[in-house]
View 1 (cartoon, rainbow, N blue to C red):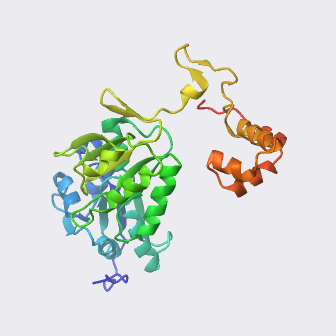
View 2: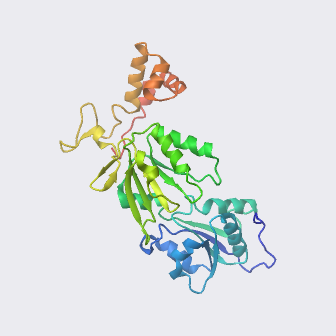
View 3: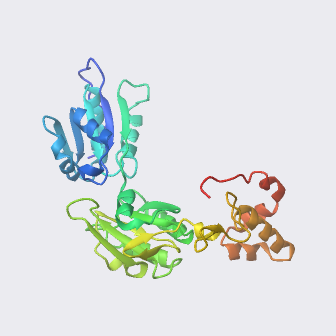
Length: 338
């Protein structure tokens, strides 16, 4: 049954309440922020998925506790708004971060549908927490120290072609990827399809780490490779980390290099390599690449050939050839991290 988005306000309270969207992190008390604990302690009502409620059981004495099932996210949000309209302080909890596949999004959808605005007497506070990708990465090493993204394999609310296009795009673009909701009792094929899409662009021996129940009692960590990934023990409490083309596993640690070796000789006390300058873009950075492309084009290389060589859209290559390098060079300022 679809929940009503009109809260019950038959009895107007003297003062409006508050909704606190609390990210409790991976679930262990040690990894919950002080503000998250404070919010739950000060709440009159705590609402959440039954498993998440169990993770904060020591903070619930004397509180109204409303437990909901996995598929009742909108109902949780509606219930929170109704309670806040009655003047209660409500802690609506999510594991990880409330804004990363958590309750912040559906709650705002319900609020907007009900006519809520930031000027409404009901206040809303989002309390951040460590998401699964942060927690899992910390347990396996440093896999996210270069560009990465997160994709949920759940097709309960997102059409599969949309998910597949995203998987294919990030696999081709060489992102490190964190897969959320990779598999459940009924959704067993999605992880196989994700593997198939990644193998179109990545080596079979690409490192993969699978972390289940990070920082919880039944925590488990599996290191495997892309071609073996789908055969591993994966469930709804798992997060799958797929490395990029430079990711390594060494001494039981998964690490994605930041790229310092492109500019510095690590065997020569970090001296810059020939042609490179500290604090400036790489010789193969934007300006260096533009010079190379323009030189190739001037020598007769077709735009379509350049597009295939660099795996970039032809219209993008064409546009860059029209941009004077001198104008771009004036914006090449020092970069703090390099």
